Image 1 (cartoon, protein in one colour):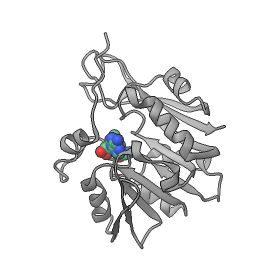
Image 2: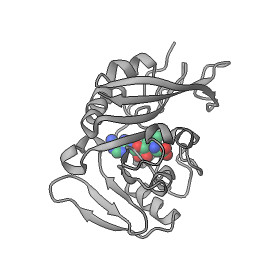
Image 3: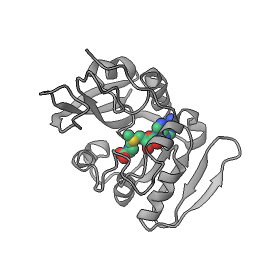
Image 4: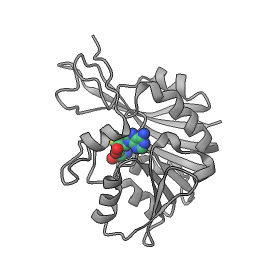
Length: 230
Ligand SMILES: C[S@@+](CC[C@H](N)C(=O)[O-])C[C@H]1O[C@@H](n2cnc3c(N)ncnc32)[C@H](O)[C@@H]1O
């Protein structure tokens, strides 16, 4: 038996995960993503730089890592508190601009090539932020509601340039009691949704899961996939 998937609105994330900004929201890493470190040169061939999108970025340190590799980094996050914590915890100054034609506040810093849009992912479009050479998705596709999968893949198809790449950490597990997020995603879910992309699996490994998440004896599987926009 599989648990019924839990659906969250962006405000639920703010009230549930980001209400106490001093506590761990449950997914933040205090180090760069090992997957990003390992596969950075697959996302950008060695020495090349470009414009990279981090959807649903929280306050991830991966923004810093990518900027330090010379990329133009654009993140998007609904929680204003998480964004402001990112700047504070990394000792970066920032300015804000409320966009006139779109429901976003744009955060910029002089010290790093990082811009963050505060707002709902599903209001984003290429006319606002342009298109990207690459995207790193850790905890995004697995976090959104299952009913939004098609809208997410359509959005990414419009934001990632032809030939551009998405590096994604996708999770799968069996649970009778835990309805996500993170949701369990199969390779079929990915190929079914990301029809504008070619998909290859770079690596599959088992990763520890919180006890509540998996049926006894089962482990959570992480598939590292590369999606290349056709
Ligand atoms: C699982 S966390 C992943 C955070 C980050 N990628 C990381 O690795 O730490 C998902 C994030 O998405 C944000 N979020 C959820 N729905 C959103 C939406 N519709 N638009 C923008 N942000 C959203 C949440 O506030 C949360 O910070």
